[in-house]
Length: 177
Image (cartoon, rainbow, N blue to C red; front, side, top):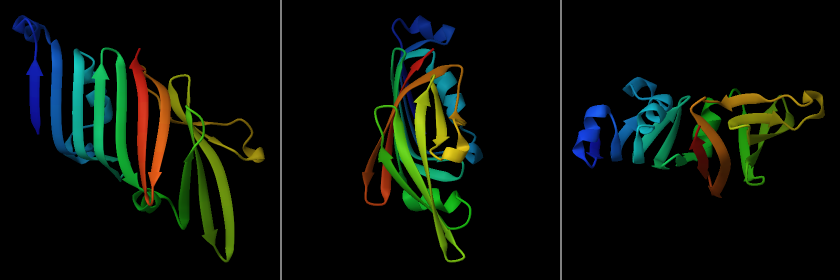
């Protein structure tokens, strides 16, 4: 891990404030003692923050090339994951298809197969009220949603997905509340 902190005047550091913080981490996750909520807390005190993580584990899924850029209260987060890594944590024989669905949502379809039968389960991963939610697109599900990410300190504003073969790059924009 490499950390660089700058403050002018330097007296700011005595009060836990900084103008700019740059952090480079090789690997981060629950096992390494670092979590995303901790990162959010630590980034709040600095005006500009740039964090890069070569590999971040969330829910057992490795996300590569993670970058977090904070300028004032605005935050941009980006990371790349493989379809295979996501499917490895899903139960049974489930495949994932993802596509952009507007500025604040990603359309996902889970393709389940087994016993000679196949089933398609469409859903939206969407930003709503500052949170990230999954909304099944099935008539039987009604208007139910499941929160994936909710944090009182940060309001999500948008989510975008770029696909390249078997890899997804997620881009999330947010603002400190």
